[in-house]
Length: 318
Image (cartoon, rainbow, N blue to C red; front, side, top):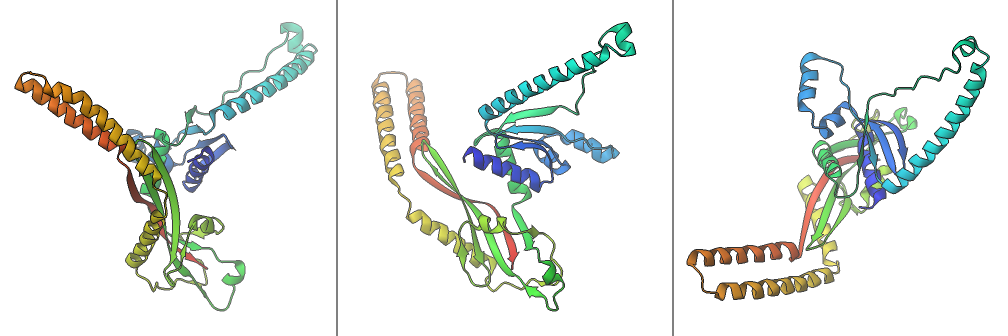
């Protein structure tokens, strides 16, 4: 995932969890977590147990998540210089005015007291592969693994004389992982109509243009599906497998070649060790070490493809 994709995913998660976005730029987002997001991300079970038992007011944590450290640092330095210039200008003005005031006559210039901000804001760099992003992925998967949403109707439809029917869709986000001694991941969000069986790729873009809610709007009718969920899920899986057949697998051939070269080096090294005259116990230890090393090489270099589902849902669209 690129920096932009990570930024978009994290902000979408925070907004979906109804967190308070305090500040946002392409390089960062500063947020005060909602109660549910705090429970999912901060690992404070004892604190939340205390709040639940005593009914004490809950105080959630605030974070600045940084997606582009260099750009964010430049923006901070620019803002700091601007603030220092404004502060110097204001101080000069206050100093001139203070000379003519009563306090100024007796005590000289009295500087303004420093402003104390709200609770501490923690800072974290977030990039693909970071532990915090993995935690957000896990929280998203557990909290939003399955949804049932309805497209909101217009005011004209609400006041219409007859209700309008939805078309139910099954949407599934698949993660395809190509791995060897290198790794590549792809996300594919597919949708299939439970009425016609039509499959739409980039289904997330379709949904992003619609206003969705877990509530069934007034004067709308959710009709029953013609295609069972199991059959629809199988259709999407077959669509993914068909795409995999079109992939260029030269990367796998290259990985197998590197594996053969690494195994040849390991075999050559341990071949001489195993030929040496030594005690049976030591020889067995060398043999075990040799087997372990080969297994590690195979695990690291052997090309593999894993397909998993990240989330899914039923979407009732007009």
